[in-house]
Image (cartoon, rainbow, N blue to C red; front, side):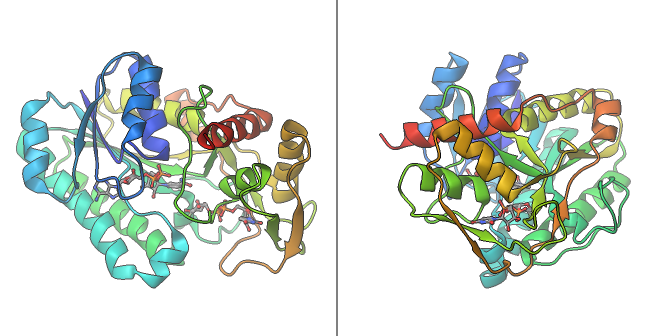
Amino acid sequence: MILLTGGLGYIGSHTAVELAEAGYDVVIIDNLSNSKIDVVDKLEQIIGSPVKFYKGDCQDEELLRRIFMENDITAVMHFAGYKAVGESVEKPIEYYDNNINATLALLKVMKEFGVKNFVFSSSATVYGRAKSMPIYEDFEVSAANPYGRTKLFIEEILKDVQHADNSLNIAILRYFNPIGAHKSGLIGEDPNGIPNNLMPYITKVATGKLDHLNIFGNDYDTKDGTGVRDYIHVCDLALGHVKALKKLETAPGLVIYNLGTGTGYSVLEIVNTFNEVCGNLVKYEFAPRRAGDIDVCYASPEKAEKELGFKAQHTLKDMCESSYKFEKNNLK
Ligand code: NAD
Ligand code: UFG
């Protein structure tokens, strides 16, 4: 059985589906701080069998012990955490507290129960302003905000913990920009309030909840002046976790992989593709650059392809279509 922390969230829920399809049983813990309980029903509809769920906080060691006692857990995938860059600047204590202490609590209880395999949700944000593109896993790391620093610190903690006990197997997965949704339209990215990220903002413009998209900057040194990112379909990303888990089953120690496609798309390319899919519903205006943004960021996906056999399959059109379908379903 695989324990997914934060398994009702955007990436965790899609990973639960891929794990179930690959024949794994999953158990989820989530405190619902950024997700809704109805995701359990949706997951059960997609998977076609009951999903074991514990409502609670990963910092609650007693609850973790109960979960490990009641379930035969062989690996943990740790998605739970706060993830909004801007908010982390306003609320650094909450970010350090939640992201780091939840990880420590999990590692402690895993040790007590002799659970050896751990997958951690890291981020391309740990590369900061990379010296060149594409970004390889051995590039220097740095962080520009408290959120990014929680990821960096946790990566360091994991290295120390694995160094002290080399029977542990840890996969640090550095995600690039996940977008898209499950093809059923039942689960997807559903942020509270006005979205910060590009795709949730676009889908809300397409469905009339927001008036227009502000494109942050059209004077970057890129193909059309707008920012370039490596957008990866969340179902591909989820499959990357299954592949990483299989790798951990071969006892590799600590491994680090980029999960991206290797292709960079500009904001304008995303909007234009989305407009093809939805029928020109997304109006946009150019606005000043957003503080802290970089011009270009895309992965080298080579290491994950070579060592995990992972290669993203979905197209940008798939990503736009599925995001739009989820948003429309969510209107009901
Ligand atoms: P999300 O907010 O949708 O999911 C996180 C889930 O964790 C939520 O359901 C939330 O309720 C839960 N949670 C938070 N703190 C918790 C705690 N202490 N105990 C129990 N549950 C808790 O986020 P996501 O997009 O699915 O991201 C998952 C992970 O991937 C996060 O660690 C995030 O930092 C990382 N990540 C995300 C992105 C992205 O663009 N979405 C990019 C890089 C890395
Ligand atoms: N953008 C707009 N308008 C918007 C929102 C975004 O033009 O309303 C642009 C941004 O300027 C950027 C691109 O769209 O060029 C993507 O922006 P996102 O906010 O969707 O994603 P980021 O690449 O800025 O950040 C994401 C995650 C972070 C993570 C980072 C690096 O949200 O958590 O990738 O991995 F740290």
